[in-house]
Amino acid sequence: MTALRAARTRLRRFLAAAVPVAATVGLAAGGAAPASAATTTDAITANAFALTIGGYEVARFSELLGVSTPTQGESWGTSTVIRPGSIQPSTITLKRQLSGDKNLAMWHASGIRRDAVLTVYGNDGQPLVRYWLAGAFPMKIELIDGVKEIVTFTCYGIQKLEMSGIQKLGLSG
Image (cartoon, rainbow, N blue to C red; front, side):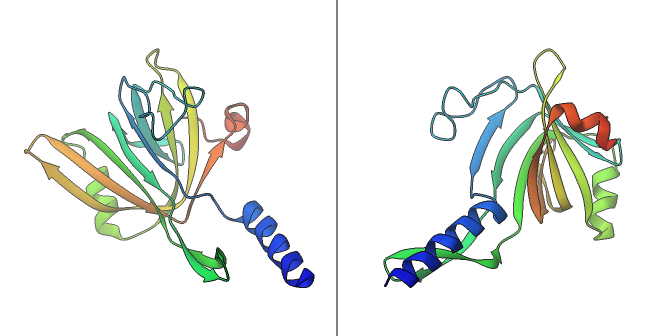
């Protein structure tokens, strides 16, 4: 029984280091995360969300409707274990006013995944935080009331970037 407990502990440590934690977050422009999604210490006020590829801004959004990094667990005794390789693609859903910009539509039609950076801007126009989206793709584009667009991106993973390291990585933009 001790060997099984030790193996479970090693697996949990491995997964904690290698697997992103499942999360759901909702931020709206000019607002903070709902109380259920964040504590007061995590809450930030966001004004805009920009998606860049290779330093070029592809799209700007007014709302972040959600971020999801689901995993699929397997029951093992009295606990649920996440096996390596069972992570589902992450999704990010953003909303904006409809524009004449065709960048997202062309990217969607291409079917090509690209690494991207999602930058969250504060009310003062300064970047608050940046996230690396590995292998991002706009999998769904919805038109709402003919004036708003909701875009759901899928990606292989999401990683928060250190703001001080943005310049070093050449990801500013």
